[in-house]
Image (cartoon, rainbow, N blue to C red; front, side, top):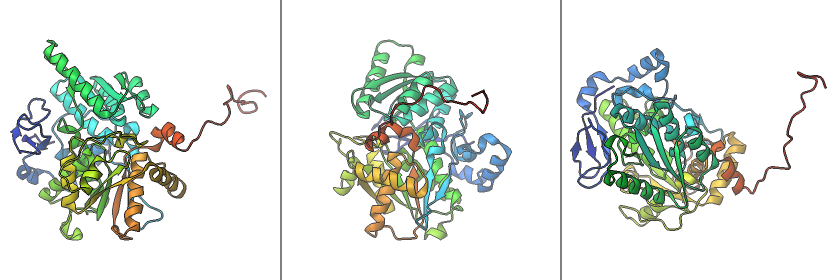
Length: 423
C-alpha cells in the first residue's frame, strides 16, 4: 500500500498534509483528493500484482485487491467489493454492476470501509454522518467492526432497513423530520457546539459527510478499477451511475485518471477516450439534471424534493460542480426519470432479468431505455449500469409504491407433523 503524498483541493489545488485528519480545503472549502507519488507507483504497482495478491490473501479478494493504489492503513473490512458484473439477457453489450452484493447491501460499503479504516488509522473516536439511508447503515456496520462510535442523522421516512441497521449495529441514531440537507445542518451545528463548548478534542465528532472528507472517494474509486478489470482492462463505451451525492461517479473518474497514468488500461480499444459518464436522477429531486439542462456550472437547491428513490433525494449535492464537469468532459449527460418510470423499470428487470433493483438502480435502467429509444445510446454499445443497492433493502417503499399490502394474517406457528414430530 502506498503512502499518501498529499491531499489536493479539487477547486484551487491547494495541498495539505495527510498525517492528520482533514475535512475540506481551508482556503475555499473544496473537496480534497488523495494524491500519491505516481512516478514511484509506476515502478511498484503492477496489474499482475492484483491477481497475485487476491490469490495469496482471501482478505484481498474484494476491493482491497487494489491495495497498490489505496492508502497505507490496516483495513477495517467486511468483505466489500469485487461485485458481480452481470450481462443483460436482452441487450447485447449491456452489463449491470451489482453493488447490492456488498456488505450492508449497497455500494456505500466501499466508501465507508475506507473512511472508517482511515478514521481508525488516525485514532478518531466519534464519526458522524447525515444520510439518505444507506450510508448510515454502512457507517453503523463498519464503525461497529472498527469499534468507533457512530452518530447518524437520517430523514424519518428512510426505508425501514436503514433505521434497523443503525439500531442493530449500536449506532447513535437521530431521525429527522426533513431531508438529508436538514440532517447535514444538524450535524454541523452539533460539531460546532461541541467545539465551542469545550468538549475534549478526541471526543468531538468527525464529520464524514459526502465529499467533506477525502477517503470515501478512495473507497468508491475501486468501482472504476473493478469494472475495467472485469472488462479485460478496457473501457466500456458508457457508464450509467445513479447520482445523489455523486461520490461514486467522481471516484470512478479519479480511478480512470490513475489507471491511465499507470498504464493499466488499454486505451487503444476505446480510441483513447474514457467512457461517457451518465448521471441519473429522479425527476422529483433533480438538481444536477436541471443545472445540466440549463448549462449551469453548479446546481441550485431543489425545493420540495420528493421521490421513493431515497438515495437520490439530495437537493443540493456538495460535489455538483465536479459531477457536471465530469459529465460534460466525457460527452455524457444527466437524465432524470419520474417515479412511475423507475417503478416500471424495477418490475421489468425483475420479471425479465431476474434482478430486484433498488429504485436508484432502476433510475439507471430507465435512463438506458430512454437513451436507447432516442438514439443517444446505440444498440450493441458496451454499457455498464450500476445497481447501487439490493432491492430487498427497499421492500417497504417498493411495496408501498406498488400499493401492496401483506395478504391476510400469518399463522403463529407452522405444522411440521410427519417431518420431525408426530402429527
